[in-house]
Image 1: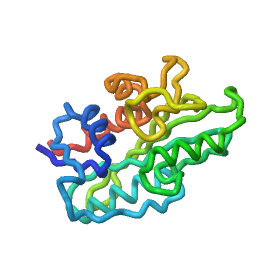
Image 2 (image 1 turned 30 degrees about the horizontal axis):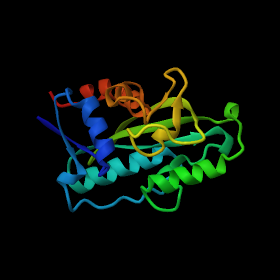
Image 3 (image 1 turned 180 degrees about the vertical axis):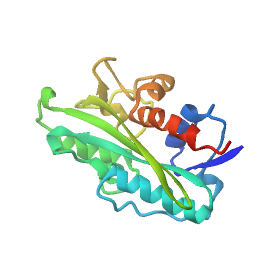
Image 4 (image 1 turned 60 degrees about the vertical axis):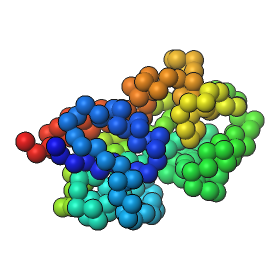
Length: 199
């Protein structure tokens, strides 16, 4: 079975990707299977640049094909912020509480109609020889004035999907895995992955 390394140490993200690609006939391994793998500095100005850098860096280091993503929240009233800084917006990498607190503070007083936002995800596949392809997906919504729900991670409890009347934090995991930005990017990548897989 072809090995595909999922370039993340984020358990939530890894579980989400495995749920979506679990039946693709691949041996999916997270970075937890490679404890010595380097930390890649995400210093790109776009999600595309960060995803490609991570995938290629780990592919060359590990000698395996690597699927890596970069994703985040873009809020229209904030000019697209937090964007590529989503996971460290509050000043500390991966601190969801601080990230959410800063977002709510910056949106204080902004009316509901102007709280439009989207999650964006870009996925890149690389081998040691180079980046093979990248695919993107988005999910449109609004930012609430306070959290709802305890599912998901990141900004999920603040991100309302108007057509469902619920936040990502309130949706069951299986539904989120069908409609999320990452699900859409992975759906776009799936046929490319199957084409890429050695026969």
